[in-house]
Image (cartoon, rainbow, N blue to C red; front, top):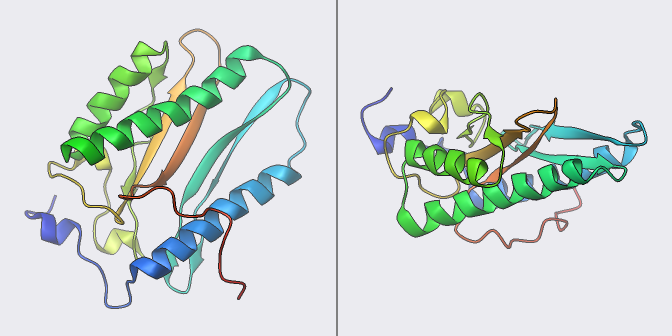
Length: 185
């Protein structure tokens, strides 16, 4: 573990928030394009988790997709995203540390009847490779996290049935940036 927040959140010379947001949009678009091509059984669910490198900048996005009418599958997808949103809002409102984020997310999951899978607990994202800056989990970060640097991952599992749901995205101050608009290069 590095000693300071500046060391944890350092960026390389080629880093640009605009480039990061462009790669985010491209990555989220690709996740949905990939999901549209997946063929699964009548009542099933699947994840797409994609982490490309584009122009020396990392992207990372993941989501759950449901096929069929199983209400628990649909609830899992909806709740994974809701827990992500609640946790992101907590980060934004409180300036939470990584540990505080995942303590909050764990409680939010429990309140909705799920177990949080802490094996997937977010990471740094930046100019490639993020591990040159910090190669650990958000849950281990004892500092308040700045925007445009960290991917929040929420993975929940059903307490009795063998399935779960997953959602991840970059922590931004303004999550409303257009997902499907990206440069056509």
